[in-house]
Image 1 (cartoon, rainbow, N blue to C red):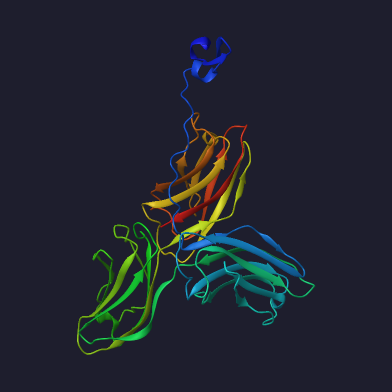
Image 2: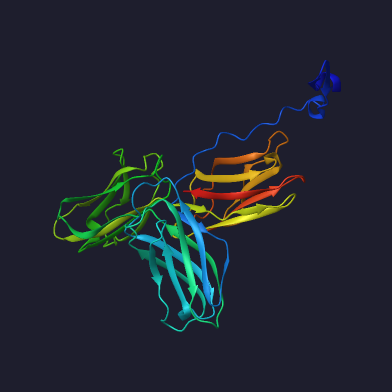
Length: 379
């Protein structure tokens, strides 16, 4: 069996088999990683690596945006999570790919200490969208120490502002053009509406997708129910890019109002924190989701980017905020080493959307190590 399954090796005029134990035992050839899937474009890009803030000194934490043409948003949002002994010493800036600095927080202010968790909005339209962005935290005075725990860049802002009258017993259409998002829209599309009306119960609100499909947002009511708020829409059967229209219908005469503004958020969360995968051990990598109401979708997409010496050693689970595990990839004796870049679709409809999700990677056999390059969740 060893002779008949070995690979023939020619040495001069002599041909002998190189023994192949796997073939002799009936095992198949190792399979290569599947063709890489395209990385989804995330609406929230985070670096969860903790950086010590020098006393005094400067620390920078990077995230990278790719595949987005043109300039950055006029309402780019940056969420910062840090701790420090003395907040007035801390200066925070966002450094764009072209080197331009956008101030987020100046020194001074209230004399506080401990955790600082804040979201800043900047007009970064003078800089390119794609490239490496850096959060820069500077301690400008000696005497206090701290840690940059994490930060998130929210590059995609699709919003329309400016008050527009809602006709009495009429219809108002307000459009937002969405570009740069390939594929289908979100199963948990967030629609934020800011409107005032003398009798909001008269109003019927629908979201019209680029393919013309209407999605109910708010129905009429016998009571003066508020129209302003955040609504979650399952729009995964419609394309993401194109013109979205918010349609407000006043179904009765006698009251007037105005649409002050509205926005769309296609929630997708990416961790760009590399994690070393120890040999014959396991690790977890977190992604924190906030602001989403209700349960997660039936078709949550999980993108995983891993490089490993033997991918067959790895068992990968998604862990929801309640601690429930969902198998994404089992271990296998036939998978070879290389880079795995794959999108898994999983039904997590019993889990809450908001909270801390984890990717659990278990190396089940000794002999090879690797790195989790990053991962993402698309709702």
